[in-house]
Length: 519
Image 1 (cartoon, one colour):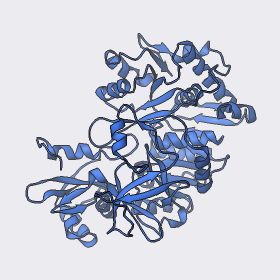
Image 2 (cartoon, rainbow, N blue to C red; image 1 turned 90 degrees about the horizontal axis):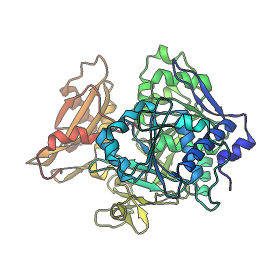
Image 3 (cartoon, rainbow, N blue to C red; image 1 turned 120 degrees about the horizontal axis):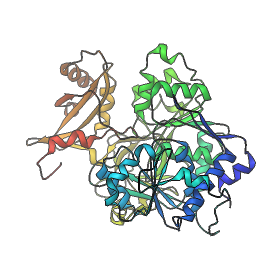
């Protein structure tokens, strides 16, 4: 079958496919016909350099841009595995991912090309570095120049070659990142069922709310394109500019971690009132749990029937959906299993958990057509997370009697204090419900007496005079005594990944330094 981009270039050639509207920069717009031409040109550049053999890995790096969208479509057409690289990584981290992935080609935004200048001698497998949207440093090639002279014909590849997959390196909380390999775009039947369940339309306008290198924003952007929608790119997230784009292009759908939307909702009301937000039809909440407080803030600013929450992961895809009508009725829930997904909970002894409620938690395992293929060159880690055909990423959950699931926390984040299991997400939700707390992170710190003690790092709202005594009094009202933080520290902001997940390992590591055991 022809690639969907080739098909849309024929069926709707003049419809806008992608918009890159940056402040103080020229507006860039490509129709479906123009996007197809550019993707074919890049695909033929890669073919001409011998970089498009089946199984080839290509690392790409850069903020959201039309160049990235062109590349995603070109690699899919060629059957090349695209490996997104977080441009915020250190040089050592970038070198590790690029080398471990066995990438032979790098496609990098000119703004971040110097990263590869610095680490070039650590990348013996890389044969070519293509730089786009700017000047290529010495020893690298300009993708823009090569594409000017390349053919716009459909790339000539074997008819039986599968579309290109992806390999996203998960950040994790310990050890080196793992490459979650997907060898195809997954089950078309399951994808269609999920889109119908949420209610997407071919006329939706998708806006990015976060970096495309992350599986959520990137995956939902590709889904939007597969439906023939228009995609609006924001290069890097900024809340006022995001509202401008929503208003200007009447954006109807997006995917967001909690941090960007918290920034939007915390804007002064006079700022928010300048922009029309009524077009937003489908807000997919994910990447990290949205607190109940944040959901209420969102619903005060956006259409009441627009908020969906999905539970999923890079490895397992979308596993649960909480629909708009359940957002306030089921606080803390991530919803029911999404179409064609089976979920089981297992206790520490490997027994299936069949009870209901928070007193019956278990590790959540998933079986579905959208589960990833393997951890690249780390099959043992893949098998360690597998049980009876079901796969896990280590999340702890329970279900209620109506079949709704609730994620307690990541198994690796669980605190054991005095023999009691404590799940940080529950405490963080309570802390964030305090009117003077902007956000919080909770984790275990070592205690010779208790094994671990609960510690909280708190970010105050601007101008707040909040004290540790105030926090203690608030938590005592809402939490059992053994869950109350025994120590607290203040921070101006919490360290986060590019997708908005809190980097608890950075907060936690100073407390455990010098110890042979981390629990």
